Structure formats: C-alpha cells, structure tokens
Amino acid sequence: MTEERSAAGRLTDEIVQPVDSATVLLVRDAVEGAGGVEVLLLERHLDSDFAGGAYVFPGGKVGAEDRALDPARWQASSLSAWHDRLGVGSDEEVLGLLVAAVRETFEEVGVLLAHREGGEPIVAQDLMTPSFRSARERLASREGRWDWRTWLEEERVVLDLDTLALWSWWVTPEGQHKRFDTRFFIAAAPPDQIAEHDRVEATEVLWATPQDALAAQVRGEVTIIFPTRRNLETLARFPTAEAAVQAANAGAVDQRRIVPTMVRVDGKILVQHPDEDEPSPV
Image (cartoon, rainbow, N blue to C red):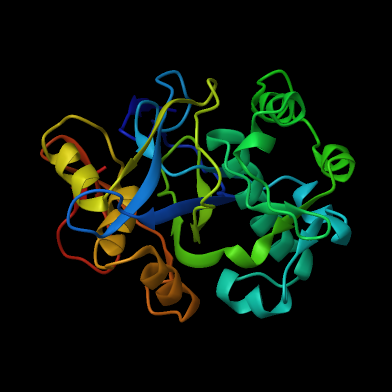
C-alpha cells in the first residue's frame, strides 16, 4: 500500500467503502453589505483525520442510534417522501440521515434545529445552560460515542426534521483513506440561537457569503475542498436564504449523486467531476 496527502486527507490504494453521512448548510440573509446569503462555515482542527484545517459545513457520520430515535423525539411530515431523493429504501435510513444532520450541527456549531414539547422554541439561553453545554461536550468527546437519546427525552426536545431540505449529494472519490456518501442539506438558521465551535473538531466558526469564502480561497487565505467549493458556488446564485431553501425543496438545484475521481496531472493530485472535461484542485 502507498500513502500520500491531499487537501482532503491521506490517499491510499486500498478499497474503502463510503459511509453514510450528513452535512448541513445553515443559511441566513446577509447582515451587512448589498444583501445575499450567508452560510455558516467551521474550520476543522488541523489534527482532524479528514480535511484538517479546511473550512467545511457542520456534519458527520450516521450512527445506529440516529436510525432508532423514538418518534416522540422528532417531527417530520413524511419520511417515505424522502426515499427516492436520498436514494434509500426505508424510513429508518431516512431518519438516520436527517437525525445525524441535526445532531452533528448541534455538536459542531451549537445550533439545534428543534423545539420543546408543546412547541416552545430552543433559544440561546437554553444552549447556554449546563445541561445543553454538557450534551455538546459529550457528543464531541473523542473518548467514545455518546447516545443522546435519553438526554433528548429528559429535556423534552423534539427535532425539527422538516426544517431540512436536500441541497446536494457528494461521494468522496476512491483513493481517499476515508470516504463518505454525504447528503448535503440546507436549513434556515434559527434566529434566536448563536453558533460557536465545539473546541474539539473545529477551531473557528464564521458566517460568510459564498462569494467572500470563495475569494478567500483564491487568495490562499483558507482551504476549501472541492465539494464545499461547488456547494458555495451554487449557493451564491441565490439572493436570499429563503430563495435557496425554496429551490432545494422544489428540486431546483442539482441533487444527483456525484462521484468525482482523483487524477494525477503533471505530478499534482486533482479531482475530476464526472460531467466536466478539466480536473480541479482537490
């Protein structure tokens, strides 16, 4: 086996199967300037095993507990309507992806797409309480996976799965030492919550317009890997957060399963989109 580095992680000639994961573009209307959309990005810790130091959207792997969450702890109009869109064959698989999206967003940036039983919204004051802070720390801990289902029941939290819309679907190219079959969702950021990084997986969170983030990448100020760049480019087309979410709900963005490949050109490792002639930087 041979190994080397790319912007996304180590390269390997072993056959690695992608695992299901979920990522969320949290969006809001830009608070300054000429309008447009801002999206929440986090900087992954340099020691992260995948995309260390890169700016990404919050997200992570689907866990078995995500697929088995008590119906009292989530709210969604329909799971079966998601089957074809997410490429799955069961409500359990749909539930796993949606719950993982909400859980990982809470863990990594402290935003919880949820309400309490009875409809009371989750607000910034809730997120600052010892109970909510402890839950985030336990979710983020590298000492072992923590099942948050009992905590959700104790706090009477109900996850708002209908706030999520499918944005895109990307699979890590073959050759990476870790591969993810990732559904990218989009959701409007709750107005009464404040994002902050988890101090474990991320070292910074920031709101940025897609245009500003991409310009910073061009200037060499930040690292943004290929699928994140492509999602930012798509998001930049929309004038408001609501318009972007509506487009996702209407299927007016590219929601196909995209599987790029890794290629080597003049000694450099590049990524090839299946629909394009020229490869791009990783």
